[in-house]
Length: 195
Image (cartoon, rainbow, N blue to C red; front, side, top):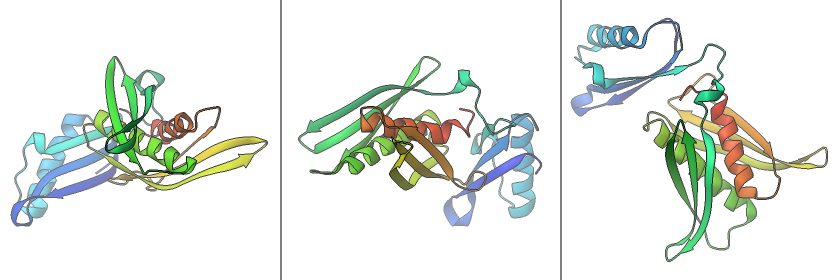
């Protein structure tokens, strides 16, 4: 269908389609029209009868960027040592709402491991913000030296896939490496999605 960038089908019982997750280009067609067209297409192709609440649509702006007002902001960073070990909790805020994500850190983990936990916690908070319509996994995380600056470079894979299937984020490390990792994760997802 025109304007559709990616589709993910969630199977139900007896190999039936339970849910359809769609990423669409914003402004091409109304959300309601996309839902109705999807219901019709699924019925014609598979015989499965879906309801409107079984079709979830996320819209991406025309240029692939998010307007500044819609972007989440990094609000809190906590690294805690507890009975279950060390963990990182990242808080994101958007339009007055807060979303939290956490990730465990192995004992004696290196700075890169701590940074990876910061990325994972940020991605979990972003998933919560998107009501788990997308999930993110880290493909690669590196610290590079460039022009005398330490830089975090991150590659994230969204599911269902979007565009070429890879999101890239980067930021300079200015003090706290966990904060830099969280900002690199935000950089990767902020460039792509309308939240």
